[in-house]
Length: 80
Image (tube, rainbow, N blue to C red; front, top):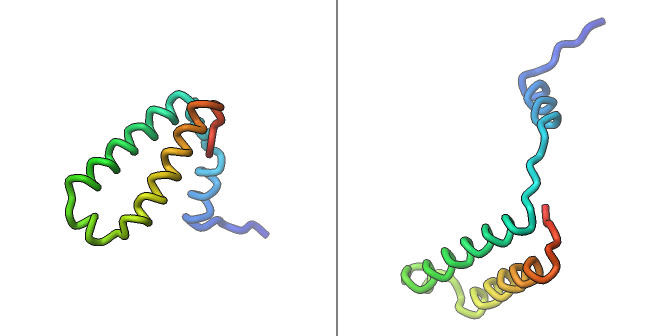
């Protein structure tokens, strides 16, 4: 007995068979530097962000982002 596939199953199989583009460590660093620049800009220029987010939580978040960038720069490890 032959079973037909649903649209979702066909889509899922197509996605699974597509090659995944892996970024180089250099490209990941450049991307993360852009993100840091954007985050710093919105924190300084958008008062709504400063009101909505606890400054200590923002600092902890940015410290984690900076640490990730530093790790990428020093080790060149690629992350998914």
